[in-house]
Amino acid sequence: MEKINVLKTEEEINNRVKELANILYQKYQDEEVTFICTLKGAVFFCCDLMKNYHGDARIEFLRVSSYEGESSTGKINLKLPLNAESVNGKNIIIVEDIVDTGYTLEYIRNYIKGMNPKSLIECTLLDKKSRRKVDIEPTYSGFEIEDLFVIGYGLDYDQKYRNLPYIGVVVKE
Ligand code: IMP
Image (cartoon, rainbow, N blue to C red):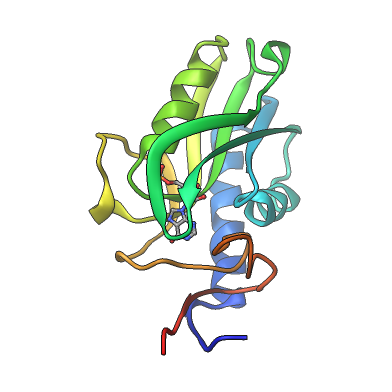
């Protein structure tokens, strides 16, 4: 395996995920929420977030893709759609791994809005604000990071490294 510089340790991630889960619970309390996990990158984050969320919660999965290697193609493909009845009239939390250019989140937000949720917010683990191409701001974000291609804790480089328990950057020789 290549050398990897750790950017966020497992402990830092766990602590922040607990904080985010508490913030979400304070917001919704007795109201049911639906976490929409965007595959594949957000799967670890979404599971940990839900395990630390102590209110009524459902989970649904959505898969879109825009990335090839290390760059966003800007063209979003819907690979696994949602059922309208799992969104209609529900409190929706879109769970994303990382917001980069913002094209993906903008697409997902519009897609879900079209299914008439009761409310809609976004929670991303990472935010690369400096790379934004569209005017979009996720409601909650775990960590703002600089313009680096990161891997681990669900994030991949050509499908590798998702299983690392931390977030890191591959050191290129
Ligand atoms: P956006 O549409 O440019 O905001 O890209 C969002 C998607 O690109 C994310 O959901 C990730 O799947 C992927 N992505 C963006 N930056 C990274 C990165 O640094 N590492 C791994 N995947 C990334």
